[in-house]
Image 1: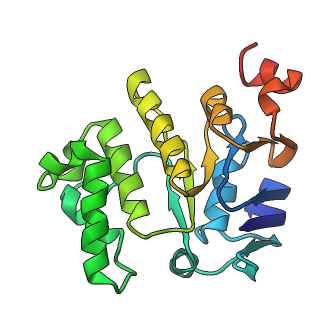
Image 2: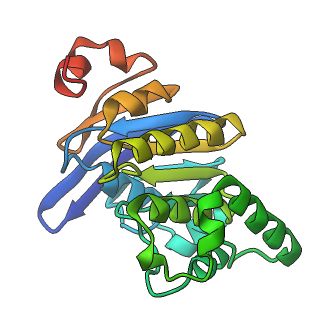
Length: 232
């Protein structure tokens, strides 16, 4: 579904991503782990059309999408949930959700999908008229994931979805990601909680200083990963 080849991303003289290769097959959960500053978020933002690549290609469903504008990438079927629970805080929960389907034309289906999101995230229903900024961190994370799903993406990319959340909420988030995949969603996950991320993933990549240094289906068994990222 997604194939990144030779991605190069720079901010001025700083090279954030250096020749990164990555692929995601339909129906997979693929994790991208690494320390802060490794370039993981920059790579996701480039795939989504929010950051420009200086070199390399991004193929999505067989078509080149590198350096297309973000809205056009979204129309092709890629949704990115940014790090930091990017709700529109002064808008209501309902208004945030409705924005998820703003590029769709099938209005009746949007309403049906909205109802399904409220069934999947029942904590949001009694809060529909509240400003999104009044929700807890976990509720805001549920909201931005629901908003992304309302776009009916072929590929859902999540950037640090568990960051700053209480342990019980973190468990809920990873359970949700697993359930979404079981229901057919393809997911690319950037996550510092390497143990939980690799546990629910089909394959994973390790990124260090802008480069992919390891990849595979059994990264949790690799001694280097166990020592550096799993605390073993």
